[in-house]
Length: 115
Image (cartoon, rainbow, N blue to C red; front, side, top):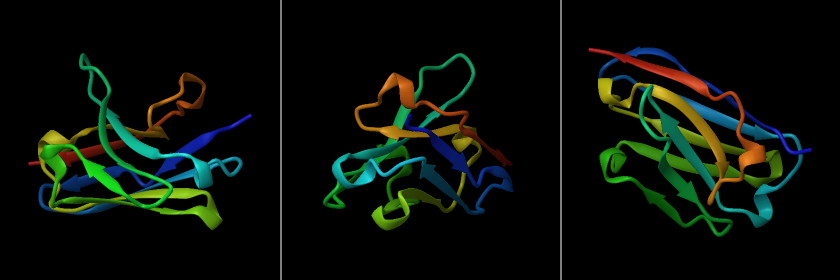
């Protein structure tokens, strides 16, 4: 059974940085595009960034130039470096494949950015 465990969230002031990590229970990264998603109460979960097995990356416009997604296939881990954080980045962040698979959703990690 595949599990994705997110970590690295926390409370940070606007302009600060956080690095999120997502570790898989078994290696699925070598053949899969991996993504980071986020969700705020009352809103749909949105795709923030993804990275292909060949390390091509994509970002939603609102985080371009501030967030960087990366992956370490040997460690079965995907990262999201978040810089120049804004209050509107406050959300629960999840990782999953892209497109996402229902069975892979984990608990997420809370990111709170204070103004």
